[in-house]
Amino acid sequence: MNRNKALLLFLLLASFCLAACSGPTTVCTVNCGGGGSATVSFTLVANTLPANPSILSFKVTIDRITLTPTTGTAQTFTPNPALVVDLMRLQSDTAFLGTLTNVPSGSYTVQVSLSSPVMTFLNNTGSTITANGVPCLNNSVCTATLTAVGTPTISSFTFNATTSGLQGIEIDFNLNNAISLSGGTLSVNFNPSSPNPGVFTAFTLPRTNANLGTNQLELIEDFTGVVGISGSTITITSPTRGVLSATVTSSSFFDQSPAPTNLCPSAPNNCAAAGQIASVDAFLKSDGTLELKEFEPLNATQQDFVEGTVYAVNGLTQFSLVVTDKVQLATTSLIGGLNTGDLLTVNIPIATIQPFFVDTKGLIVPPGAVGNFQGQTDTTAIHPGQAVFVHVTTPFVAANGNTIAAATADKVTLRWSRITATPAAPLSSTAFNITAIPSYFGFAQANTFGVQIFTGTSGTDGVTNLDGILSGNSPASSPAIAVRALFIENPGNTLSPAFFAAKVRQR
Image (cartoon, rainbow, N blue to C red; front, side):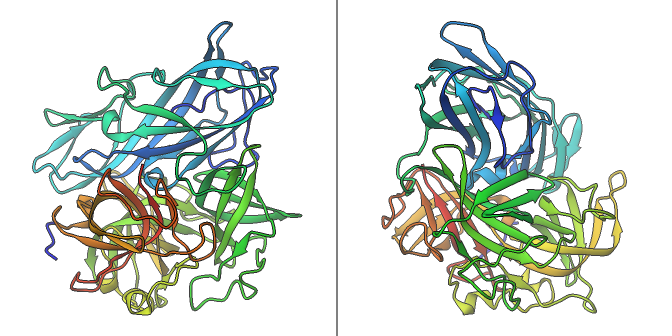
């Protein structure tokens, strides 16, 4: 291969119950308690990336949601603290926003007020562009704090709350319609005059071909943080995404930690321990609660870890990434000042780096592919576009002006890249090809990559989660397809398949 180099709705808010929320914990501060009997849960996804620039992170803050009934007085929900989401995770994943109880029956429209868009991107336009008055040179990765424009109402969607209903709404954020690059200037508009529908659309849950069980509305995946346990409830606390609480059932399963560690010797039986760092998947139930699907420990104790997308390899012992998530020490953390979207240089000294790990999360990835990363100790195994989870140690140097932060790491684990691409033949239920992967991977748009699907009974261990594709069916040739997958390459960039999918979404 040649290298070339909302948030709609949340809808109806009256009492936002976030006991199991993938956003920061919030409370309702205005017009809470509708006096009705319906329960409505809200989720958020994102789709349709612009061709330029190539986006690595896109954070937005949800300030206020106004619910307007056909008749009566509008109610306003103001999250406290505000909800912050990274839309790039939601190409393949879903964010659980919360559950609204006591909703009066009736028809509603929803208006959403967003602010503080922060975008980190590769300028792949061929010339300098300007974002908020700051130039970004061609082929550079830049972070821009933009000015929010527009307060949209989802005109194409009316939600009907029913008496005692257990209902769900999914909000879909169209990235391409929100982002504009005109005359060399990058801007964001949440309520553009065209097209129509614009940035937001909405759907009732569950979505078509979601491959879910009875009373399951949606699947919330890869929520990573520190484990807490109370009875049959596992709580994951994340400094970037808030708190998620899920109930363990007889159907829940527990994966072994990345080899050769052995943090789950009882797998697939319960091995959760308080204080671990773990990743969980959970089913959103129709009553607004979460049921644990899958649990995977990543580290035995709470430490400073940064997850990010690699955008440059600078030498055998150094690479650069965009921060997409983190877990940090409760006190004396080195990374307390790092935020989603920040740039970070990572140094991996030969004297202290451990052999690399691969987080397969129960998927049986071929050993010949895994060996291109697992057990390696320098950046010959690391490629732009990969998602890595690094343990940060001293020395750590905070960002200063135009100089990005620099960290030392002694542990590197390969995790899940999230991308949208164009499906290409051959397309089967076990594998398919993609082209036009994001430019920050460093390949020509025409290059073709294989994606492996792990088949089996939907919802069981070691099986790819399909969304919009009926279980056992092949992906279609259109529309675009989103995957969350391990991206593994050899030094010659010839591995096929190169993507090993935990999730495939096509809607």
